[in-house]
Image: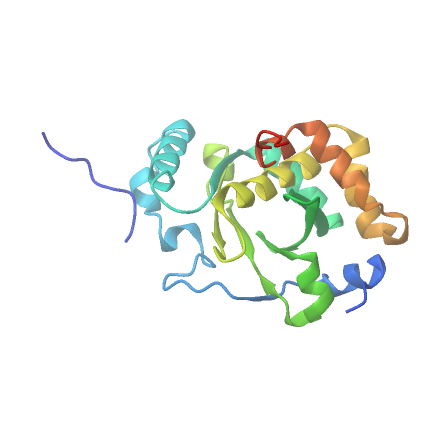
Length: 225
């Protein structure tokens, strides 16, 4: 059986206002990879070999490839990405929450072009602009107009995040930036435009309501006498 060619080329807590101002630009990165994904899609994906394929076929190729990798990925419909992108231009920062055994841990996200950098809030509080990105989502819009999709993958620091945790953060990008509910996106606007009015618990409430928190919440063992 012949094989088809592969399209792949090998201290004290600061105010929220001060946290927001520190997050206005991406942090340094502790992520190191020989072929950095901070390039165009064609730097590691052979666009010539997929130019005649449909968006659905490219979706399947992308998913099959990354299913074997220790990272997260997505194929975002063009219309949804356009909504996320337009909102990101107005509100480039936000706060996400991860369920932990004891409460929640907050992560601050900051858009830089089509990259979305995340680092733990405590990291910013203690290190300021020296804080390192612990998760970076890379969005590739090269196929958006012709194929109707935007491809996404990520780099993550596995010493801080596991894949399900990184996926939970990525899911919250769509939860807050691609929502039809003005109340939900309103939290993003408040964080960016009126940070003194922002309430951390509002993020947790939205996360709980969405069901995303339940996927990560540690299960309780049987009570012991």
